[in-house]
View (cartoon, rainbow, N blue to C red):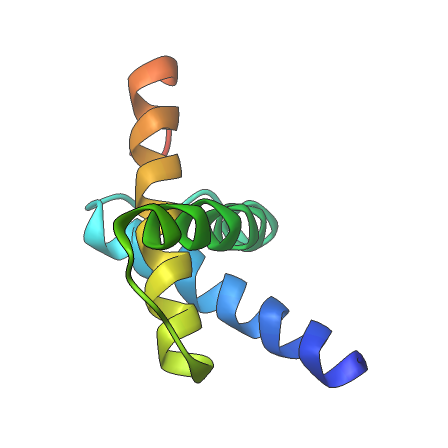
Length: 85
């Protein structure tokens, strides 16, 4: 159980960092990037399921979390104006 939690934290950190790089922003800071990545994992998992995309393992989880984090960052920027720039 503890290993899965640590894996999700790691995936969340990487996904949050990647989303900041992909969205051409500096990110929101370590804690906020972790939060964005973790919530992005939920959003990305839902989006992947709706599109019929299956993701397995670390790379699949990272892909889903990154897509979800990008969606979350895009929404935050739309609602907050210059958030994350």
